[in-house]
Image (cartoon, rainbow, N blue to C red):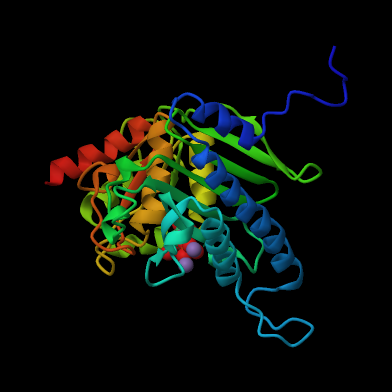
Length: 333
Ligand code: AHG
Ligand code: MN
Ligand code: MN
Ligand code: MN
């Protein structure tokens, strides 16, 4: 029998992805290798983020008087270098780089990665959870790599995920076959499967939005939030939970149910969140977990971006809650 103290059948993220990839015969382990490099980046940020909290690394000068890079930039450099050195990527889009990175042909692979190296930057200095978000496309033609390879609708993504750096370090991933959560075991330095086959509750009791923007909301959003606070059908009001790091708000929504919204408003008609490395990966995960994601006009994953830092309004979470929002937008249309 198993030794009581230790489970011996460790389902690490690498082993999980290998199993997943062995489903398709022509897989050559490229996605496994790519994801292992993303995991390396996440382990780095987990440790650096911890340091930043303890000694205020972000935006300060360190003991040698060096101009210390902000955690955004530091994390971005680590992810870009890890992704390029994996030899499995050819175009990279990062929130922190104005232009896409085209990998040197000698190191090119067949994947494009869109990522937000450090999500929730405003929360770094106060120690509130932050994260990394990524989405992965297969390129169209390795010999002819263009920006078109990353301006694809989100439904073409082959994998997406996020890592949340909070009280524990949790990586949530989908390679198109459901959603699984892995928690970093610092003693092993491995992400171990802790949340198998995550499914979001069909309906939730939580809404998550920055109420500070209420003055500028459009009618359907205002109506939905009003219904959450003053339900007409005698049901009890919903709870408001808003952390301000998309990764943390989405992770809670995925596990507890409810809806996360970053709507358009008069000041920003396309909302704030970026399509390629925030909206698409989180929408991909939500659909894989049985939820859905809506832009106010249509299914988020059907969007076809025209610029790499394009933004979109987003309403995502429990299937029935998003249905309600879709109904309000349809009524206004
Ligand atoms: P980032 O730190 O990567 O720029 O993302 C911040 C985003 C997202 O994490 C969060 O949901 C949203 O900003 C919060 O915006 P508000 O502070 O306007 O509510
Ligand atoms: Mn972000
Ligand atoms: Mn960011
Ligand atoms: Mn930012």
